Image 1 (spheres, rainbow, N blue to C red):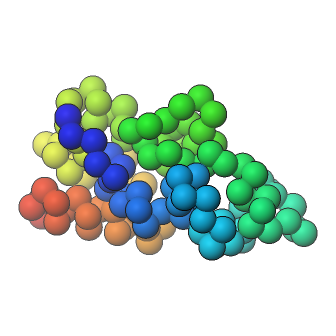
Image 2 (cartoon, rainbow, N blue to C red):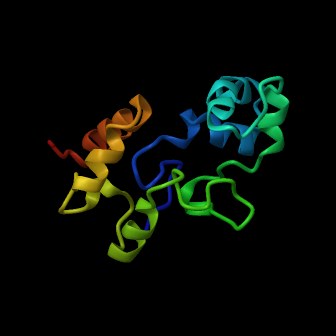
Length: 128
């Protein structure tokens, strides 16, 4: 299987702030995550980008997950990587069931997930 800088779900890792914090130590990407991390209770109200950076590694890309990753299961709650590995495909867009109900639900959570679905539709010439 070809392993790209694209997650199994279709997220372009090069556009992902969590990936950029981990792999590029990008403080601007960390700053973009501060509000979300505060909202989740992962950092305190008076903490900022440095606190986010201290949580790294956040994400090394779903094809490079290690035990020290903050997200041990891909995007935090749904592990499309395992499904793709079991089916011996590179990403969800290659699956005959794409988009499955689990994927549709995940895609509805955030605009970056919707963009991931668009990435897969374009990449696989799939029309959902």
